[in-house]
Image (cartoon, rainbow, N blue to C red):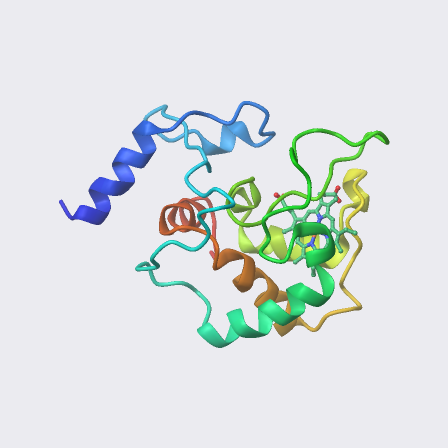
Length: 167
Ligand code: HEC
């Protein structure tokens, strides 16, 4: 067994479940263990990336700019979030913008869903994220995703691929 595989298995077993996560059912593994996104904290941003990603380095560079101009105001410049607890509803009952750096649950959503949120915003879910369908080009939306995913550890990225990812 490779070191990488062992590391993943240890992560799978060693973690605690994220109680308030709405997609909890989806993160349970076939063997019944639960997976937590907690391996990525806001201090510990990009770990060493050994797993091949869907995107290019150029997309991350473009994405950094797109993100800075369109997303950082709510999600933080490094997608670390702008509130202390993204699970806690605001006074108006809506949810604050979550971190997208792998510490919240953006990684539970396959690419298609991430892009749908960016296109249509959160209104359909009673949320406050604005729609970007007429604001950004498709390559800019993809770049923004590549940028915030650049903060995901390989473990988180592999979980995401297993849960749909780019498929
Ligand atoms: C005005 C604040 C605001 C801006 C600007 C904004 N978002 Fe959001 N975003 C939110 C909020 C709030 C949510 C939670 C859903 C909701 O309430 O609409 C969210 C949710 C998301 C999610 C889903 C995360 C998850 O864990 O399910 C993604 C992905 C996302 N935003 C990406 C982006 C990207 C990329 C941009 C820039 C192109 C952006 N957002 C700009 C406020 C914002």
